[in-house]
Each structure stands twice: as structure tokens, then as C-alpha cells.
Amino acid sequence: MPLVSTVIPAFNASRYIERTLRSAGRQTYRNLEIVVVNDGSTDDTARMVEQVALQDSRIRLLSTPNRGVAAARNSGIREAAGRFVAFLDANDLWHHTKIEKQVNALNRLSPQWAAVYALHYIINSEDEILHSCRPEVASGYFFARHLTFKYVGNGSALLVRRDAALKIGGFDSSYAAAGIGGCEDLDFELRLAARYLIEVIPERLVGYRQYPGNMSSNHLQMGRGALEVIRRSLAANPQLHQHATRSAIHATHKYAFWEFRQARNTYLSLVTIWSILKSEPFFVVRLALEKCLRLRQHWHRLVTTTATGRDPQRLDRSKFDQETVPSSVERPDETTPSRRQLLQLTEVDAELSSALEPVADPARQGG
Image 1 (cartoon, rainbow, N blue to C red):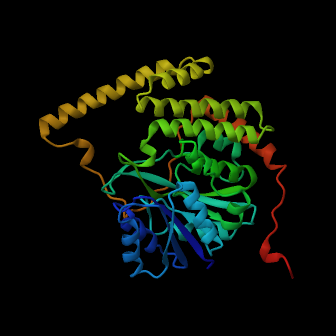
Image 2: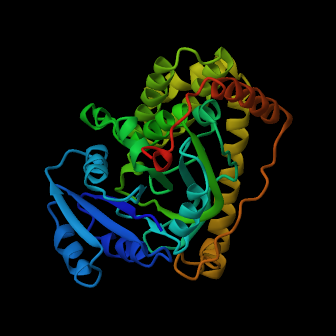
Image 3: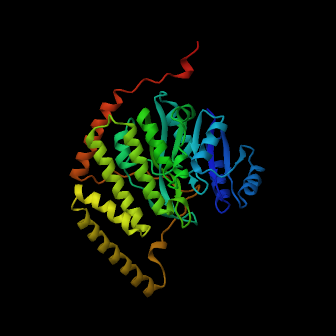
């Protein structure tokens, strides 16, 4: 049972940090250390971590000046004693079987497989499940596909070999320095996927929390950050097929457009939608139809709530906790264009993977 180091970056996380630590501590995989990197918090984060650590000796606190989530994760990686490192944001939750399933999957694979990710539910501030993530999954070498489909989805889903994380340079803290932090996990995943194979546990084992005030709610920053991540990744991989490059740019522009719309930034919304229109003119038509559908659903919800006094969306919400049964993903509803696009990107990945250098197994060296 190799040691797994859980790295939790925490900045003013007192509202959720106790729940997050309990979630990590209740893992069925017991050979854990839990490294909390207190990233210059000005609230009670450090005190609360110390209180929980009195009941769980595996927890240790590392305090640093405030430098952002990427630098905090890097500090945790350097301090980690485990062969594997699992990242957990200070407001997210894990299903109690997550680490056990990931270690079992990665332990049986060669060092060329650097990481394994799990899927997630979106949860609110009360740990209630709002909805599930997209069902698309991929494993093996999927760099070109990940540029477009961004399979991993959040920073709490990944377990990685520590030596691989160090070889790619850890997380890039320059995004936070430029004021566009928030997508550092995507940048890390893409640099990892460009050099290694990645496995998946196709079960929803992460509760990814969304609430006003967290990093992902800064839509302007998230949109700009995603565009910059893809720009840098494409610049670092000039050998990428032109089709994969176009696909990544178009997909990221769509993501950024929605983020800029939610940020109510008219200028950037228009700039991105103009770029989308040049390659996909029917996007605006679908946009209008989806807007009409959302308005209709909103109107129906208001009418139902007014008539009954109860919000129909809240009636059957369950909580993400130890008793949650991790559901496997459904097969995606693939349209002909998306299936064709997926096949083309899979071919690109097959070509790129043939050029990968083999990774030596440290367990077989030196004897």
C-alpha cells in the first residue's frame, strides 16, 4: 500500500475546510498523509486545521505567504512523502472510496501511466448534489482530445505519480501573477497528458462545490485564463495536427463566451462569438433556441413555485456524503459530427503517442 499524499491548498477556507478534511480522513484507503498548505489566510483556517489534526495525526499544516493556488500546490508536492499525490481543493469533497479505487487502478499500470482521474458531481454550499458532470470519458493517451473536451473537469479529481508531477514542473503560478488564475489545473493536466498516459475511474467520486465567491465564480478570470492555457499549450506543441488545433480553439472560445456572458462583459462576449461564427455559423441559432428553452423552464418553475410554495428543483436533492452511491457514467449521446470529430482527434492522439519516450520503472532499476 504505497503512501498517498493529499495536498489541500487553503486560502480563507474556514467555511468548508473541516468538511473537506473529514472527507479526506474518511477514505477507505488508510495509508494517507494530508498536507494542508495555508496560503496566507487571514481567517480561522489554520486554527481549524490544527483542531481537526488533534483527532487525525495524518494531517499536517504548512503555512506560506499568499501566492495563489498553483504555488500552494507546488509547496505541497515538494513536502509530500508519498509515491502518489492527490489534489483536493479546500471546499470540495471526496467519496470515501475515491483514493482506494484510484490507487488500485494506477498501481497495476506501468510508469508511463502518470495519473488517474475520477468524475464529479456539482454540489452547493450545503453539500447537496445539483447535477452531475458530462459523461464523456477517455483514457490512455488523449492530449489532443483533452484540448477540446477537457475531460478531468476540476482540480480535486486527479491522483498523480509524484515524480511525474515534478518532471513536468508542477503547477504554473504565472497565471495568478497575471490576474487570470483559476485554470491552472487544466494547464497542469495538459502538460501531463502531452507526455504520459492517464487512466480514468468512470464514477462520480468528487463533490465539486460551486458557490458565489469561489474562484470558479470569477467568470471573467476563468474565461481569460482558459484562453491563455490553450494558447500556451498549442504554442508548446507545434507538431499538433491543424485539425486538433482548430478544434481546441473553437471549443475554448465557446467556453470563454459563456464565462464572459455570465461576467456581463459585452466586449469580450462579442469578440469571442465573432470568432465562433466564422467557423460555426449555426451557433447563434442554437444559442437563441437554448435561451428560449431556459426562459420557458424558468417561467414554469416560477409558476409552480408560486402555486405550491415549494421549489420543485429542491424536492429530490440528495447530499454528497459517505452514503452516496457513486454512479457510473452513462454512454454519451453522440451526434454524427461529434463522433466524426472524436474519431479524428483519436487518430491524432494515436500518432502522437507513437512518438512517446518509454518511462523507466524505478522499481526495476538498480539491481
